[in-house]
Length: 279
Length: 266
Image (cartoon, rainbow over the protein chains, first blue to last red):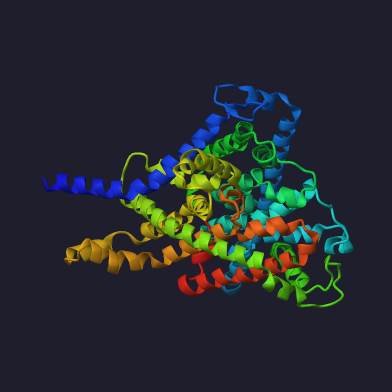
């Protein structure tokens, strides 16, 4: 009897704790997303500009058949993959140096040095690169600039998301006991072998955790593309153009499903490695 | 040998991270209106021009209000979910944690247009148009995760022993919360709240879609003025101020909660 009451009370407590967050995120937010994706199957009357709420695959047919959309999707995917790979290539040695080579005192300051720019505004950083990459700008006067375009977008996105890759890898390395590295070395493993055979497998969840940020943030970005991309277009730009200038929300919603599907596939694939626990 | 290579990469990495930021700081004193490089004369006139700029100051104030509102909501909702997930067993627990991460995992533009069309079709007919409030709602949605993660980690680490001891010694649930649970969570709430505020303060995409007419947060102001050549020096000073201010939260986290506190941004 007493137990029953205890369970009943805990159930009430749980309901009280979850009700407001679930109303907000589960009902309002998920509901809004659901309606958005439902509207991807609607169309806009080209004459009146009114939304026609009838099921139609027209938007998706356009996206699949017209080459522009395929190119933009592939370009966005390519940028997201490139940014993620460059971030991994830069973050691994940096995080390794921080966690395993630097003295504890230096480590403390290095963590701060990596953390601080995270708090600087996204726009400010993109803006800084706009100035840096300008023709006759500082970079141009030293080594030359690639100018505004696809290369600039990849550089700036890498710059923006690099700390998001360094920090999880650093955290993963910090948990990795030095004794494992010593054991590998004692057994005759060279530095490269130890890294490939011991360090890298253990770091996989951390790398995936970092890649969730670098990949998804690059995939959906359109602000950086506007600031340093010149005429480059990515998925986000198309969505933005269709919400704003073209005033075609159903079509914008249909385009927006592309990155969402890519991200859902990616998250499900990555979840198995335990990456979500590392966030 | 490997050591030297690693050290060189680290140095280059830091160089890559800091050079653009330093450039903004230097340019805020560059006498040339179009930032000719290298700078020839030094001036503080842009700083005084920025100080007098009403648009920038209003936008800053709007950003602070939006950030405080979103942080307050995120603190409440995030703590509630963290308690539910960590202290209770229930069906769909994994789904709840995924739900909290979702608004930040999806591209901002998706969250932005979803909230915008929902607001227009559900809330606007009730007579509540878009304004500062809708910005706060939008920001709170993706800020919950920072508080949730910090509080969850703290609850996981600290267990329930102290709270049980407090209850066994006759404390009421309120007393236990007031004297045991809350002090235990304080630094986690601070870290989560700081992150939530920073996330909100910096956000531009969701803001673009949820802001009512005339509502301009600082990022929106910067973006709107970024492509106007005659505003460039003032934009640059605002950028410089934001870079200098970014030291503040790290310093605060160091002082109040030790080095790990600032280490997980989300």
